[in-house]
Length: 175
Image (cartoon, rainbow, N blue to C red; front, side, top):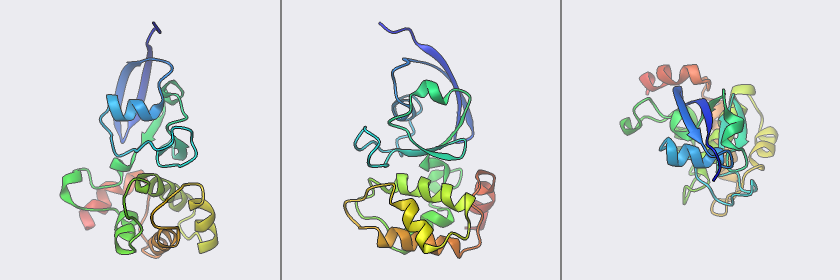
């Protein structure tokens, strides 16, 4: 039996202290221990990108990252994008843009694309279509193709909204 190791991380702004098997993935800990089931796990090999989360602001395939590697980090999942109360129905600008541009069908890959798009828009709020296309090519979607996803991210660049974690409360109040 493997001895659990301590893990301290912030998930969507909430501090967590856990004891985890050192062989477990970050995706597994997020879903099973923290109940953050918005992070979907598709391939478990890092190919599809549906499990993408932000670790210290950078997109990471959470199925490939050991939970132990996230010790001391700030993790953001798709649940962090909506207003503090996910039952409020208030979406952030990128989520609204995905809805308005029909950028999802089955929804399985959507959390990964939203987190990838969020990371891009925080770094490059005026990213052009070519840059957006390059960015979203990192994830897979078997339903929509990519045009609607690129359209949605591109439309979000025109909203003038901020996409930083500190802007979530303020954004929810405006919706």
